[in-house]
Length: 327
Image (cartoon, rainbow, N blue to C red; front, top):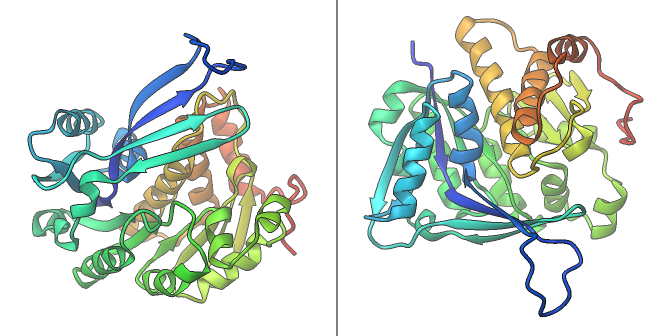
């Protein structure tokens, strides 16, 4: 039985910059922190799946004879993933500068070799070994590329999911719907799905949109499992029957915030596929719990008693422990 998970699409190296506080104009400071890490859908979603024991095949593009591209290939292989990069001579490498302060994060993307991606990069070798394809990013890639890759996976018998990422708007909704109809698991963030609904900055700031209503809408597009990531407030999942569960995140000392949403998605996908392979019915609570554990591993140290926390997450919806309105 095939058990591989193909992680297909946008790959890059992240440079996360935490500026020194209160640096005057023109002043030189040695207080900034700059971290290098593998990013994108391969580095964030694929690497955590591989580290946790799933069979992972990472698909994407890097420039031909490029030192940074080879560094990313090596770093991904060290996680245990199988890397299937097409070396493209027509593009430069892809990088993202993440500026992270105590209040906010900003992202500056250089798509580079990702601009050369094709649906056929999900090749026959990968399809032969995989049962699921996770594709991204909708917000950084041509929408027809996401749709064609989802369709290629579906035609070849793979279940699918895709990561929205970015700041989609209501103008992107028709493309989003077409992609969603080719998807089995779909979990955008609150800001992403709100942007597709045409929400204003005030709507986002005041959390005026109901995540449960968002999930109900997403189920009408066809996915078996949908959800909305709520950042530091946790996440909600729902199946197509309308059953739903909410949970806050695990508490811990945050070391970094970049990639938490991607790794949450990874945990949900892993549990979804495990239950599919074993012929077990889907369990939203175990999927939500695994997502929370993976996300916590990305951004901070897990609490020592996380196993007991997991049991709590499996049994309870934690309604009332959040400022979000679900009714």
